[in-house]
Image 1 (cartoon, rainbow over the protein chains, first blue to last red):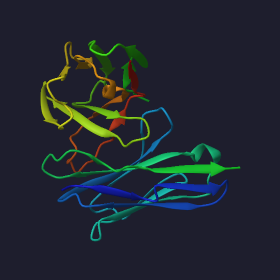
Image 2: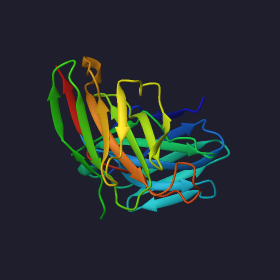
Image 3: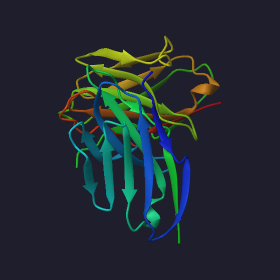
Image 4: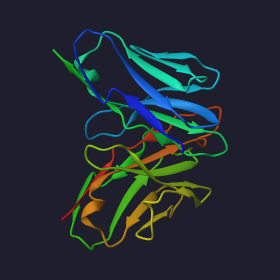
Length: 112
Length: 118
């Protein structure tokens, strides 16, 4: 069964610190992996998209990595800001029209 | 920047009533989706729509639900005979290409419609 797992479930860090969120998936055959940021009560907003051949992709202070062999991805946030407080969702899709598979998200809280 | 627009932002309805949630996808997008998110839980897939027909639907999307693209711009989700457990945030999303396309275009979400069933 195609699944996406994320860890940790929640994370609290101090403003200015770095953090790394993890995503493991079983979707096969793999096509692409996306990281989304979802503020409370809002729709998810795309941060990065990576295909099979991409190992890393950055979007400002967000850097995503992908290891398609081990089926793992990480999202690294540098110099966290209060506005980074949100849920971060990993979304994976497979080839042959398989639909997007959503992870449960990691809830990040950045404290002053 | 192009947006997916959803209306209403919040709807309160009585159990058993019918509701229609409306979405205006990004104009050149071809794939349309409805998702729901119960408070505190993960985003759940409901249905995908392409070329004026449903391309995939989840177990949640039973006969109570229907989708329509009535005029080439709007994309609607109808929920008949609402139940308490239908209370959730409903997100519309659209993309230029399908999920498995190697070009991996962005899947853009609307801000959501919060449905409260009393």
